[in-house]
Length: 320
Ligand code: SAH
Ligand code: AVI
Image (cartoon, rainbow, N blue to C red; front, side, top):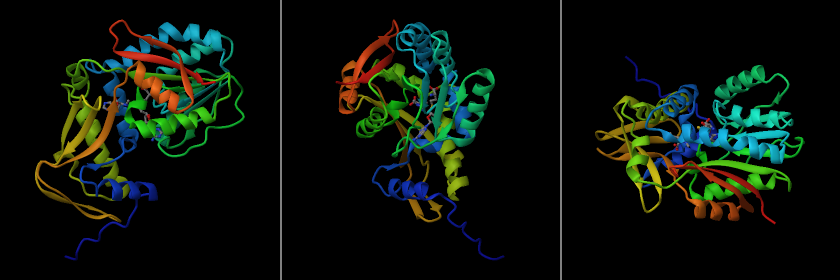
């Protein structure tokens, strides 16, 4: 039998660069955007319905409570949503905009192209008079918000996805958003708040193991798209709260010493028990959001939390 031929580098240049950089760090790490192929996006949807994952249902309650009032005051004609995913909660925003008599254009932005196309098609069918213009973009890099939208524009970033960015990356992202905003535009953000670490840890270690599957899905994406040979099933899920950094860290732990082949990167050695960090999920409070906004030229205009203080819905305006 002849030697197996290693797969040619199938990975896009950006993925290869991320693999090269991330897997050569002392603490190996990979960007969370690689969770979200169609399967990963579906697993995330399943996470949002888990009893332990309080974030989505709490944000939904806040949107239902506050969007009618906020949309009536702002009357946004265009909604741009970063990391839109399935846009389930977006319907609350769009309904409030329609009620205020102003919904004209919806631009869902996401890195997960196939899932985004499905989302856009569903929304277009549900809102026939709305112009739905999906945009595939990686918001962790420089990206263009579509120009020429009718104002005022509301830019939404829901789900506490801001938490998946370290402070410098989060500020860079918000600066880009601010750069695309006119004085009457607003930025709507959902953010998970600092609280009892046990409550947060439970949300990332669900009893049904959906989060573990979501975590391992990244290795399946990399096997398929970069021709890597991670034994995805063998990696263990670990998620813990770091109180000093106010963040969850999610890791995949190699159970035994192993060598993974990644075309274009080479052989990657993992010691027994060594981990790859796949995600951070930063938790905020009002002060940390104000700092983040200020660094991007935004000011907190409205701040509302649920009764338990688990989660906040924030409206940001361009700072003077
Ligand atoms: N907004 C939805 C989905 C949150 S899940 C909600 O609140 O439930 C995070 C979403 O962000 C996913 O749809 C994922 O594909 C997208 N995403 C993650 N990293 C991204 C990146 N770098 N650029 C663009 N979209 C990204
Ligand atoms: C999308 N993002 C805000 C989720 C979070 O909570 O950080 C992703 C996630 N990771 C594990 N569970 C959910």
